[in-house]
Length: 299
Image (cartoon, rainbow, N blue to C red; front, side):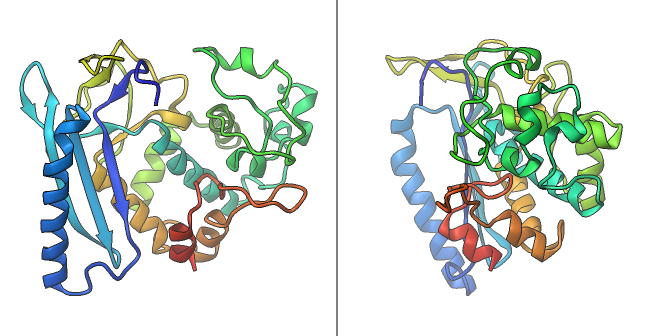
């Protein structure tokens, strides 16, 4: 991590699909072990605060916060403290986009230009699937720029031939969602959360009062903690603009994994590794990074 980048108080999410805590005694043992591990390692991180949430068998079995949410006011971090999710916002947006494919608003293999005809011709081969799985060729950040600047840049490669992580993929997906629904992305997200009973999520609106929102800090090259500079996420809500506690984020993942948000068949598709044109696998599903653990959850 580049330690000069402004960071929020870290939020760590640990998920298991089963086997850790099948009995109450094992849950207690796990909690004791985790707390001892964090107490031993946390001071050396120099991080102001840390949130940890763990689930097993579709149930949260551990949720605890350590450190401070505000260093100047000495406000303790709690299990409900709302962290900037940064790129953990992408799976939320990916799930929203996948829901739009259920209602035939979107087709995964349609060109992005079908929904955003103002895009340059080079985007005619960039599909929604490419954007969700970082196979579009759209570049990542070079600096804080507006969409109108990056969409005029050449693609880095022929869509589908390589994989390269890019937050701008999700900026475009947010614009696609706005185009097909006629709503702003904040409205789309709000209705998505309400529809599925997902609580505790907000947008990182610099002007909005977000309850229990933690302060942002950064660690410099010498290891000193200082206030992060003012940060406006309004131009990249879909890629990095959600706020939630670790536990509420975990509950969102559990709801998705269980089929309570999208049909189980769609979850399996979303959590299946996407392939390049030559058949090589990638570390990304559709909107989500995919690990062995995720594949087991979706099985």
